[in-house]
Length: 388
Image 1 (spheres, rainbow, N blue to C red):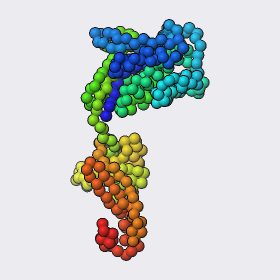
Image 2: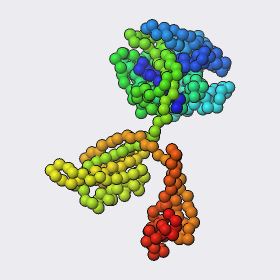
Image 3: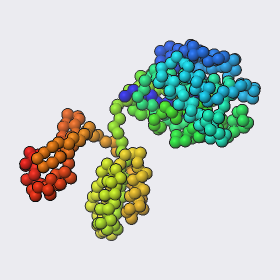
Image 4: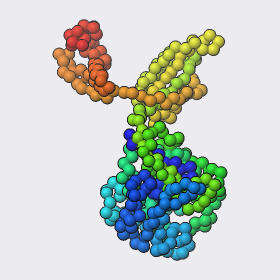
């Protein structure tokens, strides 16, 4: 599986991410000339190699009418609405996937800015230089992501910095309010260097594209590169992108377990039935010998990883346990389907499973039970009649 890993140990911004991705493609993805060809008014883009702390990387510099976003704060430039920016992106001669991604990222930014300022996203206006600078960054990243064709994107926790930052609205805490909103659900940390390390554009792009966060997954590296920032620190101020092939991941599930020595058998059966009715993948019990010689039972529930909290709440509510153990095993499964066949005793659902050189089939027990009750046959007799 083609996998892209983003090392955000020195934060994330639109230009750093774009430069890092450009390093993964031949000729830097020709990103400067391709962005200038979009016809953004007054926009110039430079893409060049540079050194930071003796390490080579790429810088992508976007200016609007000769100014970058930092220089433009407080200069009274015109503003653009979200609708105008989305229309601008719609007019680009780019693949539809790239335009859809770019608009989705910009809508994330507008929603965050709207929450910060107490407005609807459509009422948010971006000052001219900042808006066009971000449009170039967002579009460039979306274009490079499209061309890299990664099936999986992972990222490290994001360094955000600390202290304050000066912007058009005055002095704001780091991370800036919009950045903090965009990073909801993303692991972040301040780090040991004062300053702003993650911009709203960088936060929106990482949030949109990265499907998981943590250490770099195991992969065979194809290419890596740094997208450099503007400031200098003791460590390399760059976002590193690494692309390569990773083994196909097995799907993971959540397994919840608790040990019980003070539950009635009927209450345990009720809890098991309830968990299954709510959609648990499997529910099981195991006999245990517990402290003080008491006999006990372990209750286990297998569920989809994203429903872990839901099933944890059910187990805590319907058993006497005070806590659960949580595991996240990978699962190898066969593909499954159910077909209904007509028999002399009525309709019978048959479950089929196949894959990995294996094929299996099994009749639905509830249908066999119904047929046995209606025909007066035992289950063994019924199975023989049906040729099972």
